[in-house]
Length: 208
Image (cartoon, rainbow, N blue to C red; front, side, top):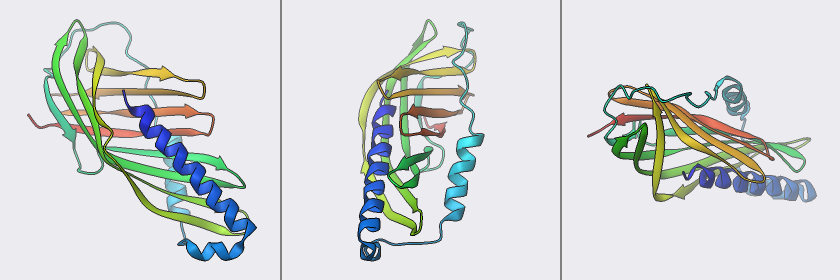
């Protein structure tokens, strides 16, 4: 699972934005090098999403698979196969970040409650803003982070629920859970890091 790469890019972007804020405080004229805009609605959206998106627990047991998962699944809306939201304390300010992109999931086999295939994240981009006390909001233009490459994946299947797996490092815990029908896969992606929480949703449609 390459979710950790996406999260890493989130964190790097947040830290970079925080450094920009620090430069601006040291040299207020530096503010003119960055587009400042009224972003309360963006900040409010990120905060609300972080509160309302619920990460489901992994499925318990091995219920029979109820639909044929084999095939190719891709973003139900191009460019928004996944949408993730993050909030970090960065230096003197608070950074809010949004990232989206496409997912292509290919499931080749399903056996013994395990789906095996590949996953690929593409067209990834991230946008963020840092609110700095006394200086307002600093925004950085949308950054495109490209293609994470095709990676093998094993997904636990129980009834209509999917467990893409979880992993822990010294600084973060990542998980990805979902549900499926004949033509749709939807779920959540969550990371709890030492910088803050990153989470969002993904929605895929079966194309063949």
